[in-house]
Length: 167
Image (cartoon, rainbow, N blue to C red; front, top):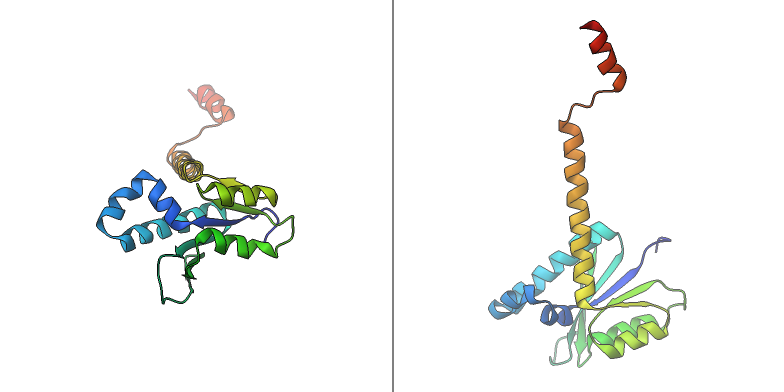
């Protein structure tokens, strides 16, 4: 990991069920909701440069082995049967050094307490989504400012004085 980089673990289903914007997707199709979240996490990855692990638990599913996918720099974990996202995250952090820079996105108080006890940062789904929107707005404003500078003819004071003297 780079010096200022964090490893962000996000509980996928916790986010999907906690953030109202995903409610429409959840009503239609769980896979569509997951894909929308994966796309949003990829966008966050590109903005933050943090390492992202998005965990979808299979604690209610039997017979599916754990699997890992990668999409635009985001690691996507589908846990093994009967394993929750919280247990997966806790297991992943168990052997990490105390100074490992980690953020966990979950509204689950148990995993939040575990992460705080390890010196990590916990963030609720609402805080995380607000942070993501802030990043996107900052990027939009920055792009708009760059575009304004490109399309605006800036004149120095010396040029103005020269023009006045020539008139």
